[in-house]
Each structure stands twice: as structure tokens, then as C-alpha cells.
Length: 369
Image (cartoon, rainbow, N blue to C red):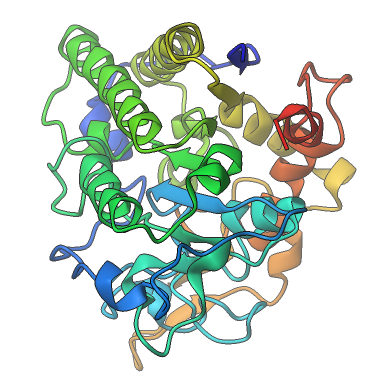
């Protein structure tokens, strides 16, 4: 079977003064100390010893990466487990860095399956993982610099489940694997010049590549890989301007562009090297920028200003806006439910007008059944 690779060109703004990229994106994704989650695959095996099988019309979804994909693997001390996170959906904190659902949930809905169970919740009383498992942990990257389980550790968790026979090999070939790595490795690097970041960027792209190859060796074939977030337009950086414009920083934008280029090149090589593999490279940088520049098109009014606006000095609680459905960003780094819906709609519905081709839905239809 031929391998396929789909990608779109990335866009990044350049200009302005050069500052330390570490300072710029150290707060890209909340980082929390997290011990390795316990291996629970033995408890999760069906009592009859047979692998779980997906419905003939659906696909399993496996998720790896960081807080842009994590739906509940972070420790209870994380803000994602405290109000007002989850205020829109499911109505209380769920471990998501959002007021509601995120890209993982929307992708699952597109596949026609429930959002996969977080790995940390696999136990005798947990939901059945027959629709897939979410291994993503906020703060993760491909290095271990931020102290959270890196991508290779998450792949090891999956390996334990796969080699124990939890999933049917044919279902794994049909399954979709979402891999989200949006910048934590750069946040952990204590450097300040573009020259210093170039080797790191090559290493990050290489390690993402290697982890996908490991997953392929364990039975994975179909990968969805988003590009990096538009760092200079995150509220953590736009606060300096009162949330009215993206930070003008040539160094950061060059790192973003280089990351996206190197990753795209490696993903194309994967499809050439690995028989039967298919990769959809989601242009997250471009998609988020398109939404921010066309808010009215998505019924949004607040682009750079986040909904979470501070902490109550009396109670210590987080203060949020009254209209998160109008905001693109929920907090200093993460989109709202409405923001994620807008971004994901570009992958599924609006492909031709801004150069996203083929769409996520078309890619899914092209996969073997």
C-alpha cells in the first residue's frame, strides 16, 4: 500500500527586536511536575483475554503530546482541575486547559467515537478504552526538560498496552494517532540567540520523527500532526501591548518557521520510508492566525485578549470573563472551546479558500477501511 503525506504551507510573521525565546515561550504551556503515571495495562485487559475490537464503522483514536491535546492526565494540582476551567463543558473542571472541549474532543467527534479515555484514568472502574486512549500530558515535549513525561515515555505506555494484546492489530492499522508538540522543548531551553536554537529545532523535529517511527513499529499507520502554535500572538506575549497586537520578534518567528519546515520535511520522509503510513500535517500556525485575523467569520469578538484575566486577591480563585464564547483564547496560552471549534473547522470545512487541502474529512475518507 502506498504511503501518503498531506501538508500545507506555514505562515509566520517576522520583524521587531530579538529577545530570548526562552522568556518568550516559557509559559507557552503550563508545566507541572508529574511523576510517571502508573502502568495499568494489565488491569485494563478484557477478562476473556481477547483484544478489544472497534466497531466496523469507526476508528480508534490515540492521542500523544501536550496540553493542546491533554484531556485529564495532569496532576490534580493543575489549574485545569480547578474552576473556572470546564465551565462551559462539561460544567466542571475536567483536566482540559480550556473552558470546554479541545481539539482532541473535536477530532474524536469527527471520527464518530467518544473522546478517548485519559491514560491516568485506566482502572477497573474507568470507561472502556475500546475507542482509544489519550496519553498526552500538559507540559510535555520530546525532551524531559520540563519534568513531565516526554513523548517517548507516552509511546512506552502505549507499547505496554499494545504488546499486552489490548488492541486488535487490524484496528491499530485503521486507528488515527494525534501527535501534539507545540513548543515546550523551546520553553525549557535557556538560550537567547537564533544560532543557539537552530540545533535544538533540528533535534525536536528529529525526535518527533523517531517517536512516530516507534509508534509505526507498534502498529500505528495513520498520523495527524499539527504544526507549532503562533508563539508571538499568544496572550502571554500580547499582554505587553494591551492585547492589541502580536509581538514583533524576528527570532521567535524564524524558530517557528524553521520548526514547521523541518517537521514537514521529516513527515514527508516518513511516508516514503514506512509502507502503508499516512500523515496529515495540520497547519496549526496558519489556522490560528487565520482565525485571529478574521474573528467575525467565526462569530468571535476577542482575539488576543484571553478570557481568564487574573486571580482574585481575596479568595485566590481564577477570574474569568462572562463571555468565553466570544474569545479565541481562554488563558495565556490555550484557545477556548469556540477557538478550537474555529480552528478545527478550517481543517474540516474551509479548505480551498485559504489553501488547506485536502481537508481532515477527505483525508479520513482516503484511509483504508
